Image 1 (cartoon, one colour):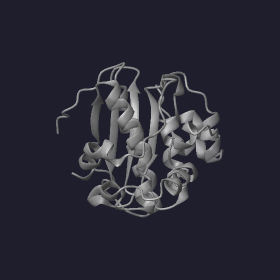
Image 2 (image 1 turned 135 degrees about the vertical axis):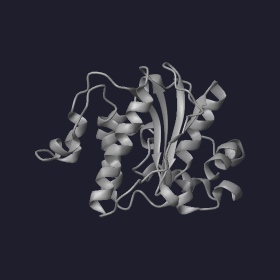
Image 3 (image 1 turned 135 degrees about the horizontal axis):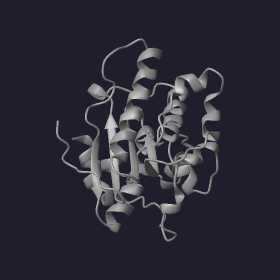
Image 4 (image 1 turned 120 degrees about the horizontal axis):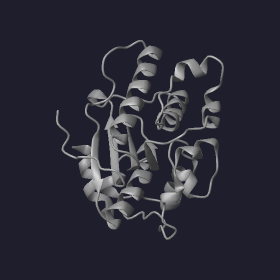
Length: 221
């Protein structure tokens, strides 16, 4: 299938994909940690065999592995039970396609082996949207980080967040998102992100659901 969005270097893109038949693709904390480790190490201009590395190292050690050059710069991400979102900047021609191919192949092989299944795990092809202006960038940035609210309030996209303090506290504690870093936190997984691309004036994430109606609708299509 020909991709509608053509990727270009030095441009931002919203990338997202869900499990086939909307199935869950992250079933326990180890699955999340594996995917986050792959977000880091598969974003590498040089090929890398994760399985060989794990024969002699812990998964956390992957973040000490230096990379010569990254294919993309990851600005934000969120992992949900049956899908994920990324905001990336393409660093080299073909970088997004190469990175996503490595990421999804490596995770699918891990998942299928662990859970004794076969066949595609993610809907193909992954979906993408070109970020063409600053307003869109800010909305997508916030939208990605707001997604986990759906875990504790499934109807928030239509009925709002309810108690915003509870929503904010949940996001701060949610380990599988870059929201933690943007609240000032630091951890080994922080190396997934390229914070140098984030504008200093970046405003606080808005909890106004109406601002993100377009993207909520797109996700559910």
